[in-house]
Image (cartoon, rainbow, N blue to C red; front, side, top):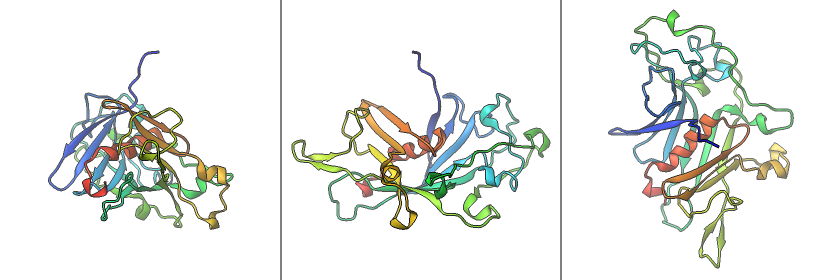
Length: 252
C-alpha cells in the first residue's frame, strides 16, 4: 500500500511565540492558499498552545460568513486575501516546578466540541455549509482571529476537556509506561495518551472514561504514530500532537 499525505506542518519561530502552520500539501504553507488548514501557536515558554482553524465550527458559521470550504476545494485564491483563524482549542502543559520524574502533564480544552458529544445521544458539530466564496469578498479585507468561546451568540456550553492518562511505573524497566498496545515502541517524553476529563456528576460509563481518544508515540528515529477517534478530527488531533515538538524544558 502506498503512502498518502494527509497533513503537513511548518514551524515558524517568532520572538515571543512559535507557529506551526498546517497545510494539505508539503510545499505550500501560505495562508492565502486553498490548501491552508489552520495553525497551532505556542506562548514563549511553550507551555500553552492555541489551535486556530481556517473554518468556523458549525455553530459559528452563521455568524461569521464569508468562509469557503477551502479544505475540500482545489481553487486558489488571491494572495491579497488573508485567511481568518478561528480559535477552537487550547492546550496547556503543567510546569514541573519540583522536577519530579515522569511524563509531561497536559490538558486540552476543545472549545468547538461540547462535552455532550461523548454522552449518550450526543454528537460532535460538523460544518455543513459556507455560503459565500472569496470572490464575493473585498480583495483587501483582513479578518482577525476569532475566539469561538466568546463570539458565538448562544448559551454557554461545557467544552470537552482531554487530559493525559496517568502512566504506571514499571519496576523491571525502571521507567514510566503506558499501554499503547504495540503501536508505540520507543520511549520518549513526547509519548502520550489522552482521554476525556470527567467527574462523577457527568454520569459517564467507565468504558467511555477509559477510552483513549488520542495517542501519540515514537516508533523510530524521527518517526511517530498518531491514533485518534471520535469526536476529534484529523486536523485537531494533528495540531495537538504538534504541541509535543515545541521545546518545553520547564515541563519535564
